[in-house]
Image (cartoon, rainbow, N blue to C red; front, side):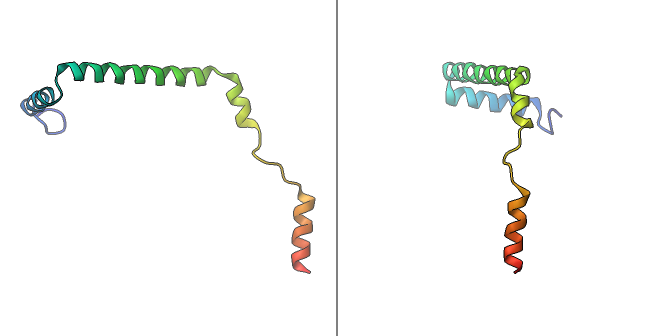
Length: 79
């Protein structure tokens, strides 16, 4: 038994079929593109963690409401 009930022979058969369908050149470029995407994603996540302005944005409220206006509105509806 291999990974999750899949034997090594089944994995090899799937690998051979994928290589035959896509070809080694296309698989190489696909792996290179995928690796570059993962690398840039990790870099962006690290940059976001180091950015001190990102914390300031989260501390600001989304909107400011005045309680006086909300009391007047509820008072008018009750009358």
